[in-house]
Image (cartoon, rainbow over all chains, first blue to last red; front, side):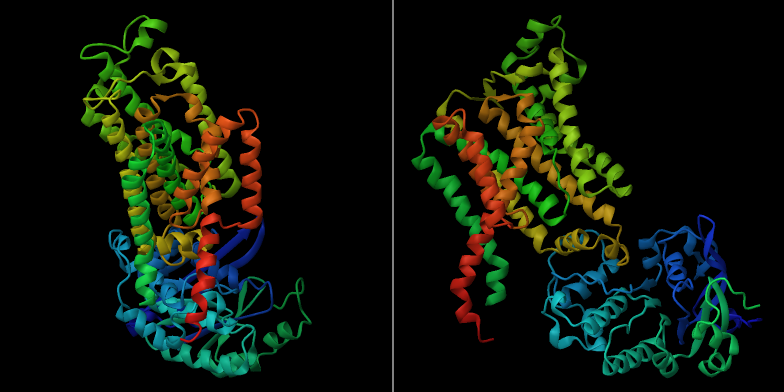
Length: 260
Length: 352
């Protein structure tokens, strides 16, 4: 299938560009020549059945697994950078299981994410007051009332919001979110979706998701992956109308069957 | 008010310990007991560093004897040269060697260089070692075994180099400490006070580190190292910083141990000595501010009193106590105090 990629430079936008990205696990290609252009200001969804390579793609772009090809953000080659440098370049991510620092308070969790902006010597001082960007993130993700609670007691959904808040404090311009609404109630999903749209205006947001209702409601662009390759890219309506995608999702052609 | 107590409460506790060690102890203890307490203080200084690296940083440093030894031997070499007088060479070199002194001993004639070396040598050694270990992401039991092996190697090396380091006997028979005669009880008291003062200083330093953003980052690294990477920090650097500070503290402890004990030998720095340091920290509570220091003082005290009364069985007593504490108070004895305090305070705090 031919996919048209707009030329982001012409649009004067911030973007993350992925070209021919391949992750090879001893001969098994978990990600196989993926091309993606992720533009600022859109909530971009990455969907596909289990084992399609979605998380591996994000892992490759954040320095967790070695990959070949190209992943470029603001003229920096992400594939040659180490994880913490990628974060400092403005590309942040979350994980399937929310990992917050359970013993630290909500406020401390957010504050610690602001470390990228601080010099090593500033680290030796105790925190005084709440930095404005931390207060802002607290408000944005709606955890202001819980700021002094240990993060370990938060509900599952709140932990995910806290993680998104940490990305805000980090000032991640590209946010790669791995199943942020898994296990959330319908109400929490709504709130999360609204949150993503709110913060997505000036950022590049990429969400890995399984829940089609959620995708339908909040996606600007959807990329369907299958067996390590991009199967299709388009709007929600286009994706849903595609017989190929339906086939993959209904499981008639799982591994081994070609869909050429 | 509550947050004031939380912030400065520990400082008050350190102040109480300072008064006990610097005012009460010299007034009530015999010179012999005071000197013993001085030794415990030296172990406690090393223990404070272990608390930082292990309790807060999650690195089980099983070979702190190495750094304790670096400081101890550096100081002992200076004291040995001071005892030998200008141009003189240490007695054991005449006894076991050909009467010539290795060139690397020479700088330790200078007191200023010795003090510099006590800080710089362990810092550089720990930085190189830590860089190699943490960048390769060696952790957990592998890290513990590696550091333990270093202590064995270090002690073996010392024993093997009798002409240069005094071998199994170590370095002893010091007469002067930076110009002060060590046989004078007043001067002995002063040396004790320096050790106790350094212990208090290390506690204050660690208090500041624990409440700083670095302290939060260190806990975060301990609990979720991979996550810290995605906050834009290299966890190796965070751990390295804590490891270096712990090494320098162990070295300072060792440096004060030599003049107080009057000897430093391979048995003070080997694997067993390193484990005794760890035992004190575990007993007191590794993640707590005062836990490691109090634990090390207690283990030191137990070591001397039990070994006086039961020369053959005392290690069993210590082992039994260790097991009991781990079973009853896994977070250490200091946590039991904290828990008791909270039981008293909680009823008042119930309403927000």
